[in-house]
Structure formats: structure tokens, C-alpha cells
Length: 378
Image 1 (cartoon, rainbow, N blue to C red):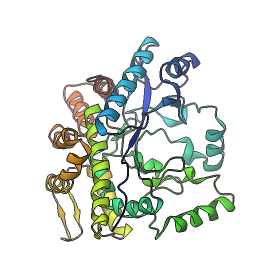
Image 2 (image 1 turned 180 degrees about the horizontal axis):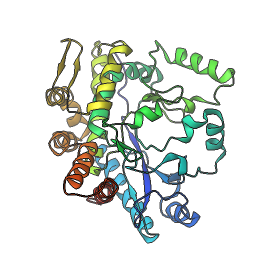
Image 3 (image 1 turned 120 degrees about the horizontal axis):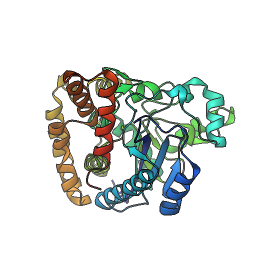
Image 4 (image 1 turned 180 degrees about the vertical axis):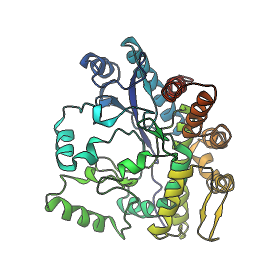
């Protein structure tokens, strides 16, 4: 099949939480000067988020994983250095270990005001952060086709990036509690399957025409065609606290898309499975991360995650070579050996409790680890 190869350019967004270095709680009302300094240093690459305790950064359009990863580190460092001057620190994590959403203050932007007016408590409790990876795919039809196929791998991406085991001071028993919060909004979860970009546009037009949303940016699926750019935007991942892990997740995302493109180019395709099956793996990723394996639908059985990861890396080996991201991809097993952020947070917490600390002090120890790990290698 004669399909022009996409550019596979990259843009990566990360959301951070700002903590007070004295209390380790969130900074509910940071001074305007902090954001002004960040904007002066980073321009449009930094922006406020729904809560004032959140800050978002985004890379420029990058040609390869290495340059995107280097820019992520550079942006993290700028935010860290500016926040430190104010007595704060950013943590790259999807939920704060003990902060409470009801005490947060909302950013004064029309978009956010409209969101909370419409969604009420479902939006007001969105004290969560994510990492979004945009991959440049210029052809609209290819974008829609690859969206359907990549859905199979979304639980795998979540499993490797889990960083939200705590919520309001409790160990939730989930490695990614974030999605239980986000799934309270409409138009979330796994993406729908469409036969063409025109069919996707018709569905979007119905919701816009009915006055339910102003544009396609109000569709918050785990994977979506970007409303602003000619990209597929993967949104399922938690924020990776470790910057090297983040780079590996970006590499895996773009390599999977190139692999799926390569199959279509050769008149093949990845089988599209029912959402009820993929949702089982999505839940397993939220609950267990990499601990208990996932369902291999072809085999009809749960397979250990290290086996699945080895298969994934083999599938995309030639794509990593073509895209120049072999080093980042080959570091994926480090996530299994070191543990995801969620695993390591729980380990810090349990070791602190076992040493005789109170629950609150153990949670503060987790925040201290998050501050250190976020800044590692910058």
C-alpha cells in the first residue's frame, strides 16, 4: 500500500504539582510572580492548569526522542529553579500523597470556570496530572486508523508509567488512582473506533451542534486526534517522576505507532479488539501496574508483564533503530527492575511506617522522595 511515511515528530506535555518545602503540602495560592518568571524563562512552553497548585510544560515540536527528552529535562530544571526561589518545589507525579482537592483554589480562566460550572464536583476534584505525547501523523485517515490499533497498547503504556497510588492520605491499593478520578468526566476512557476521519468529524459535530462542547478539545479520551495539531495525542499515561523513564515512555509510544504504520504499509494491521477486553487490561494496569501481568487476547490467558514487555520491544526494535531512539527504548526494563514511581512511593511509605513514623510523617517522606526524584539528573 502506497502510504507516505508520517513525520513522527514529537511534542510532549507534562503537568507538575507545586509543593511547599516547609509543609510538603500543595501550594494552594502561589504568587503571580512565580508564573510570570516561568513565562519569562519559557514563553508559551509553560502554562497554568485547572488548579493553581498545578503547572504544565510542553516541548516544542521535536524531530526525535532524544531532543524531546532533553528539552523536558531543561524545562523541569527551569521550573525547579524558579520554584525553589519561592520556597517551593515541583513534583512530577499524578496525585499528591495527602493533599485534599476541596482545599484547592482554581485558576481564574474562562475555560476552567466553564468546565467546573458544567461538570461541578467531577471537575473540581481533578487534582491529577498526566503526561501527553503528541506524534506527528499528517494523513488524517492514517491518524484515525492508527488510533483504533494503538488502543490495544494503551494499558501497557499506563502500566509502565503509574505514579498515583495515594489519594488524600490513603494508600488506595491502586497503582494509578488518577484514572478513577478522571473517568468521572464524560468523553473519557478508551477512544471510539471510526472507519474514517469524516465519520469522527460527524460525531464531533453532533456534540458541538447540540451545545455540549465548544470543540474537539473537550474530548478527553486516553488517545485522541489532537484538536490543534496534525497529531495523535496519547493521554493515558501518568506522569513519570523519573525523567529517564519519561523518555523511555515517549520512545515506546512513537515506536508503537511506527510499527503499526509499517504493518499497514505492508497490507497488514494489528487486530482491533473489543473495548470490553481492552478495558480489562486497562483496569489491571490501574490496579497492579506491572505486577500481575495482562491478558494476551490471542492466547486467552494472563501473561507476566516482563514477557509482554520483551515481546513489545522485539516488535518495535527496527522502528527504534529507524527513529534513533534505541537507547531510550532499551532502558524500558529499568522501569521493571527499579519499579514505577507508584512502586517506589509505596516502598518509601511502608519503610517509613515500619521504622516507627506516623502515617503523616510517612507521607511526608514520600513527598521528599518525589522532590528528589523529580530533580534527578537535571
